[in-house]
Image (cartoon, rainbow, N blue to C red; front, side):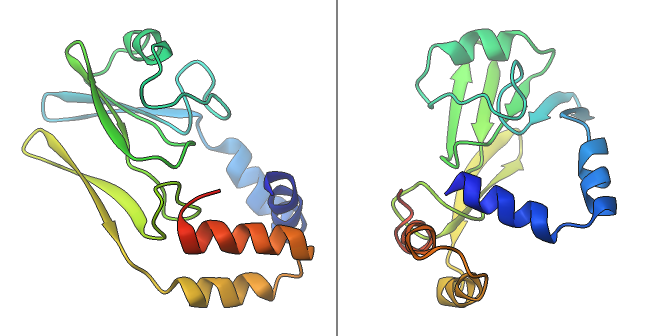
Length: 153
């Protein structure tokens, strides 16, 4: 599935768009008030492809390796908030291809120094109709639709 969607994306994205994406930083560090945030797609040690489950002990080293109060990550599409020492690790989940057992889009809200994980329903069938127009192989299309409808692989 990942290979098929990667090839499709590469075929429809222009060279200028690809260059824009290549030029994006692999991480961002920002401060809001007294809170330092570190943001990356996957993990600090492997920003594009690092994969850690919520309960992995490897997160301890990952979180301790960055100068931040809050580490925001993604890649697994699984929402969670985890306290590690004095730091908070947050994965807000996914707006596409959820892995929560529900088709809802997921996100996190930071307010008053706390994170709330949220989700909302969206028109999944409209997304599926667009997906069907992209001409993936039938087995890939079926798998992508299953993920969108069920929030599971």
